[in-house]
Length: 280
Image (cartoon, rainbow, N blue to C red; front, side, top):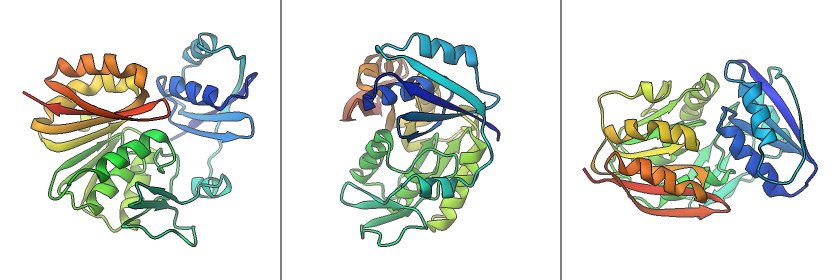
């Protein structure tokens, strides 16, 4: 899959400005991000790239900061090497799970050890939404439960679920890079019982799950909640993340249309993970 690389420069150096723009870019198809000094670097699949939409995001940005950007075709890279160069360090989540690359040494010892060698795929545990979703899994008894990891990226959530004793586990991602990377990470972690599918909601079948994890972005979630609800039985749980606390009301309103009730949510910075239960 070919990508467009866009570099953004800001008149304001407040870190939250980059975070806010990252969220806006996620809603128009950008899926991977990194920061070098004062520059935000974002990647979007070439067929998805819409410069008019990008110009709208920049011109309507709701914070008083001038943004300049430069777009170009991204060169093919060894993304594991890129992560090493950008200091992807081991991270411990919930005092129970450590996430690290196969290239790391002196890794902290934890109950659940997950190796992630990311390519152009989201999910190393560093982003708040991934951390929130992992904490949600760590707080659940997953023994024998079926689980769907929607927008699976590196498959980090599916892998953790399997290590916690989950039953049938499926990961789905629309990005071919993520699809291939997820399969590699499954092998590395010795969790072969995870099925990875390439696609979006169209990849769902006539099946139900005890738990669905969907860490994507607000617009895709609003579009696909109806499909998730059909794949849940009464009492099943749906966790969604990839949006801000201020987005909860619109997410909740759409979920209620499909028999889902908000039970709780957890917050990290401005990001949230919300838990819903299928009621009918």
